[in-house]
Length: 400
Image (cartoon, rainbow, N blue to C red; front, side):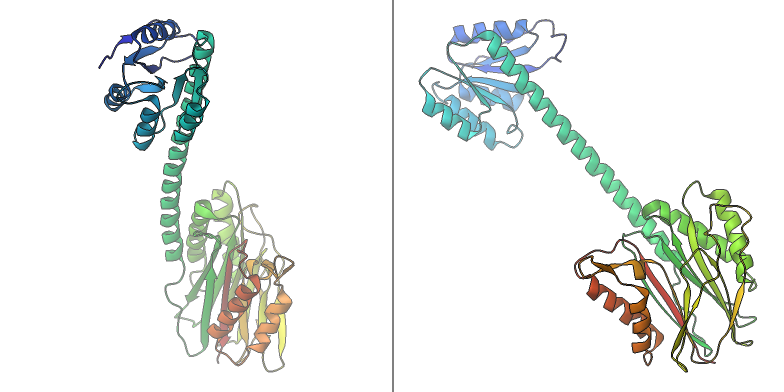
């Protein structure tokens, strides 16, 4: 085995690379090494395919192989095959050197995985140019692989962050809904991403017996939306203490969100059911209207006070409206992902007309079964098409 190296000052335009020249003719090895060294490459030499394979296994710095085709013990074609079969060597570029008229060997070599051929007698400027081009291509491939690995690692970290944010967001939702003889609650939550932008909360004020239900839709999805959702819940819990009026609750929430949000906004609807006065007091911050279904006359009323969303403007006034309610009434809160969902192959929106139709069709079912039925109908209509927005529904029956 012969393993020799030559070295000169590296080229001004290319970083130094280590090449392996394989030929059983010492004169060809010497001349090729001379010209490549002159062009700034570090050159190793081997006198056989077997010796070359051993060098490749021992020296991880080798970036390209120049090999004669016809050699004893292990030919250039056999060397190509052996290199391509070893995982740690398989990507090294190989240029085969063949004599004129060896077309069949060229085809065989290319089929085995050789990257290029050059024919004897060769022009050294052409040889150097081919070496340079294959080194550039190989380095570009390495950069792509490195960039791909980096993106994969970043994506894994991002997915871990999403999972953590999802755990936080799910922890923000009610673990259980209050059970009370004066009302019955139900809910459905379908985030379009692992971390969605929808949120709801339920508060039962023991002193007065009032029930507070809030639903919110944060602009966006992902980790940023989860953080805003957390801020929304914290601000709500602080503002609603003691059964405060819905308009005052939204105003207090807005002051906190507007002072802390750098971008984005939140739409909110808050209802406060008073079982003693039999009233539903409510306020909206740019959210879709709440539906009040009265089975006694089969009517659906839209509760839609006008006010802007939360988080963008200071000193917004949120009014509190009131609606008398009676036993048997049903209240439905939802986010816009429900009626804006595309169905029938994306040809139309699910729409509020269908939602109201289902509320009437399922009037004899418990409130949770009604919400489940609406979601099941929506999912069936959507088919394989993924939703573009989160979908949240909260409902409660007024029992007394």
